[in-house]
Length: 308
Image (tube, rainbow, N blue to C red; front, side, top):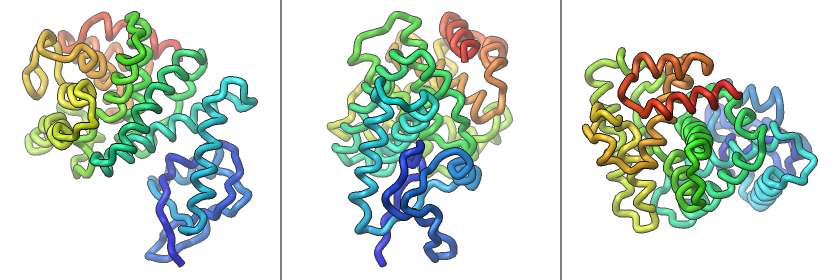
């Protein structure tokens, strides 16, 4: 029998599946979830705890899987649906994470990039028009320290920060969001252990980490379908306003949207990869990263995290 892989991040919510889902163990396909079941609650948690990124379906059930995805996303974005905001948020977060992974795995694919771009615009509207969406998304724990999940979290914080700064132009917020989602492309396929504080990294690890923004931007610089703003964000998201980042750029030489993503990225690095509690992250940033990010950004991010 022929199988095709699907991403676990796309399997969210209480919609029943009309295909069988398998896991691969020692080259054998084991039925994990039967047609008529759903990926919610404990089942999803177990998959995430196992750090399982992919499952498999029979090739001839791919159409059913695509229909499941489409229906799931449409329902999640429908403000008049009877789904609770947590379920909707889980589906949308998983969809955004999947979009990032699709682009990471095949940056040459124009269709994947444009789909992710369109979805980024929808995501901005979802976060800005649903009062509970922000906290629902932020409370989905990144248990497996996934860089695409981290990208969605940074995008979520960036949208909230942009909103507080009065940035409302749809084109800007769309590119800000897409850039934030894709910002860590340079870490894709990297063997670097990200789950360690930057200041305790070995010299060799730190050198690899310093290169990742340039590595990511260089890989996509020649792709005509990539927006320059998105490339700027990938290239500059670790820069600081005082010139202490990998490229040594000061704020005046950076893309303003990259400065914003840099602040959101720095705070989620503390939360996701350095296990700093959300309530303490801004304070730690204020002390340990003094002068690296606009003070206003840190204060507003503190307000955002307090509101979760």
